[in-house]
Image 1: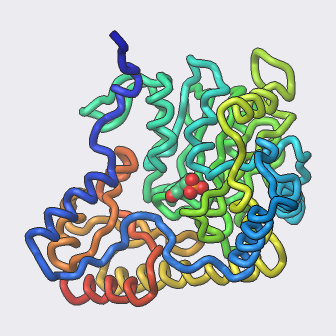
Image 2: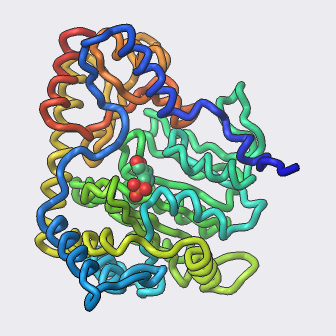
Length: 407
Ligand code: PLP
């Protein structure tokens, strides 16, 4: 008889967002007619910028004519898009070869799949709290032991706590790790890392022969001068870091789907010469993936054009203003807030020693506001909730007002 993967069975069942949805549904059934104010999931809400829409419509016109129709493209992505991504890095002083850029259908798939080119016995380290995909994809791939209820985490994973004392920036682990997942600006805490803070991880990785997987999905939200937008702004990172990025939060592509990964030729691995990891990722993508949608890629090229960049920056500014409104409002209420400056997420300390889920329930009950419990992002997220700035301005303002008036 067929057997299920014992690794997938190992995944703890209570995935965060279904549980948020379950509790919200119960609340709605008990409170018919009361409007629900959602500041939970990091899903974009504003319309696509006009130059992107025009480019995608034009691509559809080309596809609708036999003379200009195109089918499969390069698995690694349209060369025009890769060049545009390359120019974006050049502006940061980072020169990439076209063979180092891989276009994808988004950063989530890349974050989940990248572990597959590394050895089965790789020791994985994650910031705690962190975007759940890093942990879950490694659990499903058999790189961990079982879930440990007592520790609220998986055995065999190295958790690097990111706490208020250190501005929610973790320290490199004291033990050995082969793969280190970092995300800045951080989901869920909204923290950003300085060059010095990232350099500690790059130094650790070079010293320990580790590879950093740097998720920069929110890099375009950085407005504070001097904060690095890419791990490759740190000297030596091209030898030890892979970077992932996305058009989702920058251009509103959460539904359109487009992202990219950078796998430098100069990455070092213990059992293979330079360039092997790049070739393995290319092999993996060519075997399992047939390239991102050509319509999305046309939109991506437009998003990186001068006009598109202006429009996308305005879109990001809109969400950043939402974050500012949320943070100011919650602080007026006396809540301790972090992040929300170079990030769409405000990380809020639960008052009166409440747990994440208790504060979630309280906000829902009293203010009709849905947030995300911090404990769902890892053991060190307990005692916090994440408030997301993705929403129409009027809804964000109503939610903040409701918290101020009713909590
Ligand atoms: N990485 C982080 C840190 C995220 O928060 C998200 C989405 O919320 C993603 C990746 C997913 O990006 P994409 O929509 O490109 O798959």
